[in-house]
Length: 222
Image 1 (cartoon, rainbow, N blue to C red):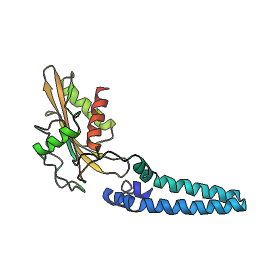
Image 2: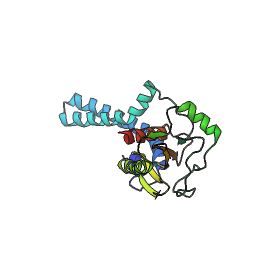
Image 3: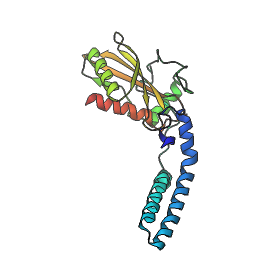
Image 4: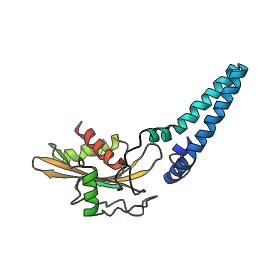
């Protein structure tokens, strides 16, 4: 539990907790499961119900620790594109103005990767497109802010006149931080909402930023 939630408790950086998880979870799970099986067998022979129960619990805990490895071996996950910067507008991606290269724990730059990144994103996530809405730009901006708060993001800077804001979202387990910028522009009688989500660490985001954008758009439409 400490490996999973230590960063949220302020014990270490998210990368440290994730490193502990990758290095130690499987060995710990194997040791607990084996010791549980030995205990279970011993107490079954002795017909000691309390010991049988304790051994069974240990086996369950050990197998729970090993579950991610077992699931990955049975059904290997699809490898995500090696990118961590996703934008609904790859031609003119929203720029960060409040968040900068000095943000805590950041190893990735906020500078957009250009046409090469856009090409990889288009192939990996063709469904990531700007959100068109019939709402006037001001109303769409306020709704975008509301959705951001509902999704638990920390809004770190907003500009009502320019209809843009920046925020930080964190993953629920290891507490990795991703940086977000949203810009709303008038479009005919309605408006257009563009969003960009960037991970602070890691070459690949394992699809997290794309899922976040799609979740935001779904909640906005709802």
